[in-house]
Amino acid sequence: MSMTAELGGERSANARRHPHRKIQWSAYGYMSPAIVTMAVLSFLPMFFTIYISFTDWNEMHFMNYHFVGWKNYIELFSKNNPLSTAFVPTLVWTLVFTFLSTTLNYFVGLVLAVLVNDKALREARLYRTLLIIPWAIPALISTLSWQGLLNQHYGQINALLHLFHIPAVPWLDTPLWARISVILVNLWLSFPYFMTVCLGALQSIPTEQYDSAAIDGTSAWQRFAYITFPNVWRVSLPMLIPAYSATFNNFNIIFLLTGGGPARASTQFAGYTDILASSSYKVALQFNRYDLSATISVVLFVMIGLISVFNMRFTNAFKGED
Amino acid sequence: MKQTDVSLRPQDRARAWVIRVVLWVVLVVTLVPLLYVVTASFSATQSLSSASLIPHHPTLSNYRNVFQSGFLRWAWNSTEIALVVSAAQLLITSTAAYAFSRMHFIGRKYGLMTLLVLQMFPNSMAVAAIYAVLAKWGMLDRLWVYMLLLIGGSAFNIWLMKGYLDTIPIELDEAARVDGAGHFRIFLSVIIPLARPMLAVVFFLSMIGFYSEYILAGTVLQSPSNYTLGLGMYNLINTQFAQNWGLFSAASLLSAIPLALAFGFLNPLMAKGLTAGASKG
Image (tube, rainbow over all chains, first blue to last red; front, side, top):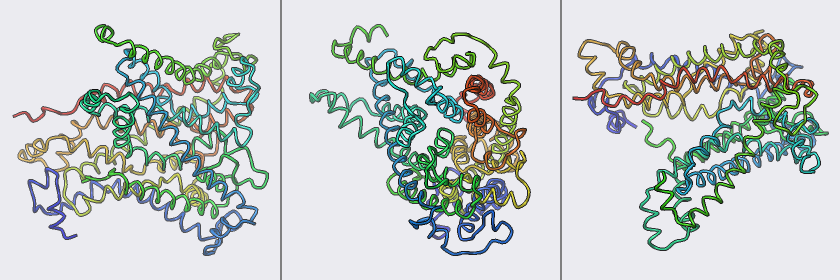
C-alpha cells in the first residue's frame, strides 16, 4: 500500500487535521521501551524455542549441542518411543479440555446472566455481587485451595459428602475424576467473567425487540431463542474465541490443581490431566529435555496460531484498529 | 422498588421464585468452599476434615505459625515484584500509547495489531529456551532476572491505554503547542495527568497478574528465600498436606491483603470519570 493511500485511510483526529504531515521519527523513541522489551523478552525467546526444537540441547549435550533437523518432531509423534507415548493422548486431552471447559464456562455464565437479569428479581444486584466473588480472588490462591478442599482423605468436600452418606470421591487421584475436577474448578474460576460479559451483552439489547415480540404473542422460550441468545452471541463472540486460546494454554489450572497427575505408568513426561503447556514445562524443568520441551511449545505455537487465525476470520475483534 | 412489586403478574412472581431457588443453590455451591478455607484457617490441625463451617476448637495458632513459615518473605517478594514491574509497565505502556495515539509514523496503522497478534504467544510458553539460556549464563535464581523477564511491554495494555488517550481532546495538545510545548512536554504535563484513571487501571491489572505469576517464577527462582507467593504456597500445600492445610488457609487469606490495599488506594482514581468537558468552549 502506498503512503498516500494509507494516509487517506487514516481516521484519527490527528491525521484528519494534517493530511500530509511528515513522519515523526521521535515516535520510534517513544515506542522503543515497549518494542525493545517485547523483542528481547517475548519474541527472542519464541524464536529461540523454535531453534532449540531442531537441536539436541538437553542435559546430556548442554555445552555441545547439535542441529538434528526434524528428529524431535518425529520422536514426538512416533508411537513406539517410550518418551512420547503420552504425547498424542495429551494433545487430544488438551483439545477436549479446551472445548468442554470453555464451552461449559460460557453457557453457565450465560444462563446465570439471563437469570440475574430478570426484571422480576428485585434483589438481582445482590446476586450479581456475590456471584462475582470467585473472580475477585487471585486464581493462584483459589486453585491451590481447591487442591486442598478436594483432597480425598482430608478435604472438606469429601467430609461434606460423607454427611449425605456419599462415599469418598477420589477427586484428584483417578484419571477420570481428576479430569472432571479440573473442568469443574475451572468452571468455578471462570463463570463470573463470562457472566459479566454476557450481562453487558444482555443489557445492550434494545427493549423494543422484546416489546414487539410480546405483541406478537411469543413464549418466553421463543424470546430467548430468537432475541436474547442471538444478540448475546453476537456481542460475546469476540470474547469467546480468545477465551478458547486462553484455556488451551491454561498452565495454572492444571499445574496448581493436579500437577498433571495422576501419573501415567508408561511415561513420566505427562500425567493424565497434563495439557501441552504443563507438559512442556515439566519436560524442561523436571527432566531437562529442553529440546523436547521446545518441540512441544512449537506445536503449541502452531495450534494457538490456528485458533488466532480462526478468531480473526470469524470476529471483528481487531477491525477498526487504527 | 415497591411499585414494581405491585405490578408483577402472578406468573412473573412464580418465575422469580424459581430463579431465586436456582441462584441460592448456585451461591451455596460457589461460596461454601470459600467459607471452608476460612474455617480451616481457624481450626486446630486435628479437626481437619470436618464438614462443619464452625471450627470445633477455634484457634489462632495457624495465624501465629504463618509468620514462622517464610510466608512474610514470599508475600514481600511478590509485592515488591508486582510494584516494580507494574511501575515499569506503566512507563513502557504510556509512552508507546502516546506515540500510537498522537504521532504519525510508518507502522502506526498495523503496528499495534501486529504486536497484539504476536503476543498471543506469551514468553511463558518459551520456558525451555529461557531456562536453558539462564542456566548456561549462570543467571538462575535471581529476583532481578525474574523481574526483568516480566517487564516486557504488553501490547494489550498499550491498546487499552491508546484507546483512553484517543478520548482526550486533541485541542488540549494544540493549546499546549501554541504555548510552545513540544511532544515530551505535552506528554508529561497534559496527557499523563489526564490519563491517571487509566494509568491506575493498567497498574492494578498488571499488579494482580504479577502478584500471582507462577510459571516464570517456577522457571527462574529456586532457593526458598527467593520464593514468590506462588512458589511458597505451592510447596506449602504439596508437602505434608495434613499438617499444613490450616497454615495454608491462613496464608491464603493474608495474601489477599496487598492486593486489597492496592485496590483501596487506586479505586478512587480508577472510578474517576473521563475528561469530558475538559475543552468546553
